[in-house]
Structures are given as C-alpha cells and as structure tokens.
Image (cartoon, rainbow, N blue to C red; front, side, top):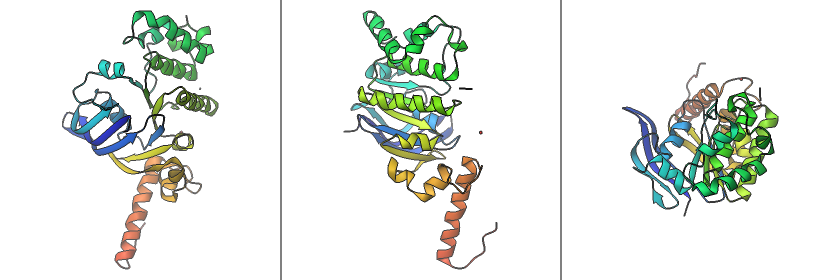
Length: 272
C-alpha cells in the first residue's frame, strides 16, 4: 500500500477549481518528483494534501488514514510535513527559534535531542543558531526550512520548489540531502520546475499541466521521453524558451500530428 495516495482529487479556491481529477501515489522510501510550469497547480496540490486548500472531490490518504477534514496540525503529527515554497521562515527570529517552532507537535522533552540531530545534519546551523534567519544566505535559509520540518520527526516530506533561487552548487547540496534523508527512512514528494534536477535523483515522476496529471512514469523513462524532454525539461533544441512556451509548442505539434493523420492541411505558423 502506498504511503501517500491521491484519488481523483479536485480542489481550488472558492469557486475557482485548480486541480481536476488528480491521482498519484508515493510509496514508502521513494523520492517522487512532481514537475510542471508556473500556475500548473503544483503548490495547490501540496496545500490540498496538507488541508490548507479545501478538497472539493476525491480522496487523500496518508499511511492508510483518510485526510479529508483532518486539521493540518494533526496531519503533521501523523508524520506528513511540508517544506513551503520560498522557505517561509520567521525572519526576525533566530535559527534555533525557527527550529523549535517545527517541534510544536512533539513532546517538550524531545526538543533538545531533535535540535542536536539537526545540528549534526547541518553543522552550519549550529554556528548560526543565534543569528536572525533573515540574515542567512538563501541556501542556509533552505537548510533551516528543511531542518524545521525534520523537527516534527516526519515519515514523509512535501518539498515545494526547494531549488528556487539557489545557485547550482547549493541546489546539488539540497538534492544530496534529500537523497540522504531517504537513507534515514524519510520519503519525499518534491515539487520542482527544475525538472532535470528533480528527475535525476527521483524514482518516479508526474508531470502536471493546467491542474491535471499529463503523464507519469519512472524518472528514467521521463528523462528519456523526447516529448517530455522538449516540452518540460528544456531539450537541446528549444533555446531559451520558457516552460510555458515549450508546452504550447508541444500542444501545437500534437495537433499537427493529429491533422496529418486526418488528412492534409496547413499549419501556420531566468544569490545562493
């Protein structure tokens, strides 16, 4: 049985539907990537799982337990924790104060050992423990965000754009950390626009487009799929086009292929 299961999930904001009929699974011990363009519904999907965005239809279950109408703190207590986009730290609070905030669902007697565990994993945070979070570099802030999530002793992390705004060297360090956490028993669903990085270290991947899952498969298969590579991963011949432009190009190519099958016609034609 999957650790995280989504079945025909529909959700959104007020009357605006963002996700439509989304289904995906994440098995214990996996790293699964969810990739897509800006506005595709990636963050909405994570927020729906965590109970922040209301579920309009379908079902979400974690570790065999339905999450519909479960409060976010109870979801965290069950072992599912989100690392939000752009870190969302308490900027004027110290590194250690931010980490302590992540342990709000744990017993008070556990906090000291949990802090020591994070400082062992992130030695730089021990050095910066008394420093205001807003004064750290982007990479160090991302470490704080992940360490804060780990303070809750999660079974699974939902990481929202962990590479956003970071230099390539720092991105690699964050990816290496996610892989290392799997060795400690932490499963991960990684939402990324940096699809090559996400899929290079994932077991499987899903591509989301305008609120629907467009395709899925093993990371190796997605990286080897020419259509996915060109539309979503920035194939060698796409130049500097944005992801949205590549998606539109993919759709036009698909329509052109359909037209050729139906009969002849003319198609006109971004500091660590």
